[in-house]
Image (tube, rainbow, N blue to C red; front, top):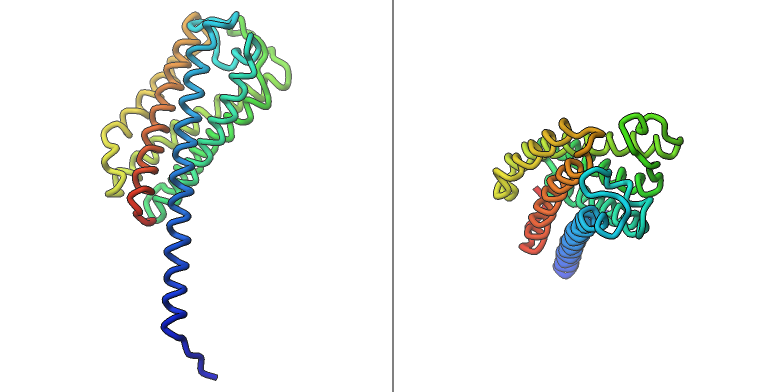
Length: 231
């Protein structure tokens, strides 16, 4: 039996499609805002909590802030930043479909977001010296391993997405910063160690990574607001 379509049906379907597309872009815009807010909160807690805590800005890890005064603030910052990063990973994937490295890069960013949530769930033990890293409780060891892997995945993901963005016209405006950020994060990851400067070096690395996330999220929001569709 032949099936006919009325013009009204085609108009309705077209209108529905546009409505869904606009709704998706609005979601991506809100996810970008969440990612930026999450990183701002994380940076504020990482840099400011040492001034009201018994832990030091220069010599203590960011994660140790959860053990000190107002530690719940640092725990919440990890969780919010993690959720925002997961949302950003989804938004990047949606807006780079078809480009080289889209899946790999966005998944690596998502691992970093998940890692931030996990380090909030599995807090570190106190670390007074290099030897303390390897003599922690089970929860502390989970924290150390998850933190190290998530930092590494994020840095690799930043490099992968640098090429992805360079090959996609609407992302190209992020150059050269989108290349400089992962290079800086890698350098800080390599020199970071459990020494007298571990706190400031780790905060510098997190700041560089957060800068990349904020920059990428800003571009996601600009694309969503302009009404551009996926690649």
